[in-house]
Image (cartoon, rainbow, N blue to C red):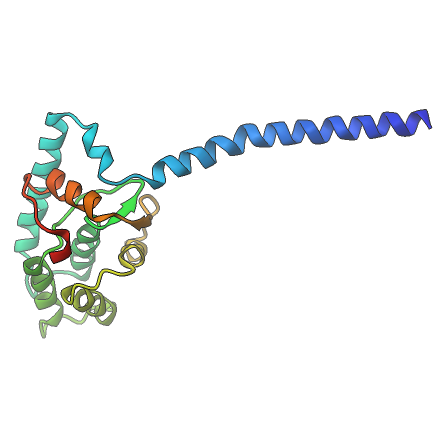
Length: 186
């Protein structure tokens, strides 16, 4: 009987220890996921003016890059441009680059996709997305982002949701030379 109590006590101590160790490692991961899940435009509030200027210059170069797209552009280039456009609307832990999601940029990419010389492997999927965006349909934009992200074999920056209109407005202000536009138009 004494031996049985000893084993029971040992098991209880082991279970409590395992729960404690598990909580020690799991709780910080949960808290970190919750804090990064809200990652949207609020990150820009904590950036210095110099960091924001550098980000805007980078995005301005991306915009100039988009304007140079033509019927000779590669499928990878189009996927990259579309992926960067989704950053305006999605919540993700990390976002590398941004192109404004507007009618002119959508049309530019659509023109490249429709060019006779393009025989892209993913053409129909890309055209479906761009036509959806052209109609102002951004439901599931986070899923659209992740499809493009997977085509690029992404491993950091999976979209975890959609920005609110206010977060999107802040993203636009922080990324596109301070110009603001109504996110509903995009």
